[in-house]
Image (cartoon, rainbow, N blue to C red; front, side):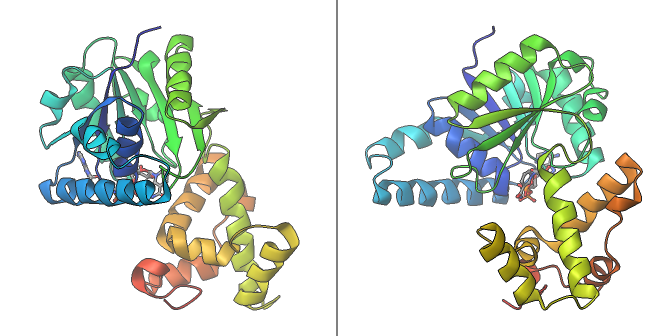
Length: 284
Ligand code: NAD
């Protein structure tokens, strides 16, 4: 199995900075790339303050912080950063054209043995792999937000992902302190295939007047022991993201049981996207 030493993280947003943080903390050499130099500097500040919080809690030593930060280099030059990568983990914007262009660049610039992974929540790993000439070395690594805290990583096998790529990536997720689960490349994988229809159904309950938003959330919190109700969670994820994932499930699985709730569509059309716009099912 090829040894992973250098991890390239493409995209320095919410997920990219978390993946870079965890990889550096686990001793890997990390190259963090974004098209925006501003996003890179914000990402580095976020990693620093999250490490400081961990040190305060006692989960790492203060003296570890400079060493962890020293393992991360940042650049906007993707081909240069890809040259010595053993694996690239793409966490750029959720848009197929953006991912296609990144994977084409990585395929040309990264060494032959380099695995190309995507953190996509909803785009087909098989379709991303088909944009490269190394579909056997393309795989999904679906982390959860916030990455330094959340233990799960869905390892998504595309149509052509090789056993060796799968085994190396699975072992890497474990080395990053995660609990990997193996899923096949179908819309929504397992996480969003189950979560999003639950959220969508909660929105139907609200639309049909079955109960108030607060009461729907209370049922799921107290009755099912969920830490957060589905409507509160939808606000946290972003209603536009929820709608986009429901569309992927509906189109990809071709079953009307995945049709997005009309109230979800209406709220997105109104710009009520949840926490990020200050209003969704609740006001913030
Ligand atoms: P984000 O918007 O916070 O960050 C995306 C970053 O990608 C931005 O900094 C942007 O400048 C950068 N970017 C755009 N085009 C680029 C390019 N060509 N090259 C390099 N960088 C580029 O998004 P996010 O929430 O971190 O999501 C990233 C990916 O992770 C998406 O595929 C998303 O579906 C997936 N994901 C998100 C979550 C979540 O909870 N946010 C959870 C799991 C998976």
